[in-house]
Length: 339
Image 1: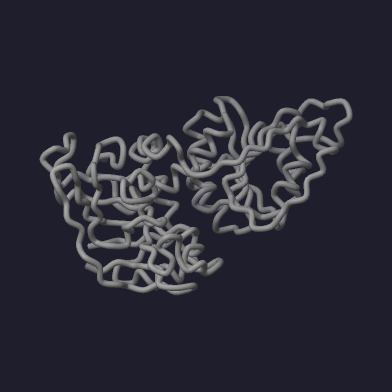
Image 2: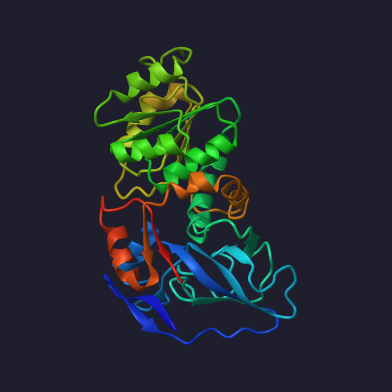
């Protein structure tokens, strides 16, 4: 069968690989959709992931249909629609340095256990929407790390897939008001469609003034400079150096800043100025427990999650899809759909 591999620094190719074989403890999944992540581009630029440098299978945002169930595997049957936990495969991380990737027709789950490597979902959920399960788990982990609670206020910087996923995650926690900040009007419009209470265009508006207008003023604290908006949680889903700096100038006492974004440049922090805010700076990576927690919300609100997908490509155009996804400004969320 054919699969997509990183074949060297900056290059990917469709290669011929053996179709995986399964035994009595295993499950075969026919991939029906797989999203493209920014890390796919990173893996390509570095020429793969050791120990598979130069031969790294790609694809770690899959959804599919069970094609074979070993006789010792309970709780699954042929034809079931499933989402996968790509970090729990016994032959390595699926599409992230392991032996297999999901830009291929068939993936084998060895020593398969429902609720560990896969979860069955209702048939009416479109496969491309189900494939959002993995990145939405990343977003939900950031929300969980924020400890956002019902009645609180939140601001999300960045209306890309993770930012929109964080918006949906915050709403699922009962957060009273969520505002999304971005530079692109098209992304802000999508944030409103997904459920943002308001949006702020940081290229055209004074972010601080607008947030005070939307949330009101937080109580003054001795020694603190300026008026602060009444925001409990900030989530940086964009990774621009200006975002933490902006938040530091906005944070009220006890606010939390969660950073799931990848920052590629150092950010200067004036801890003296921050002292009176008692701000918590919380990093967030992956999805230790959230991979199937987010599935319930996708099932309940799949139409809203569907809005996150900006581009869909057939599997025959997977290499072009990877190029589009890696081109800044060309697309927001790209999904590859298999027949």
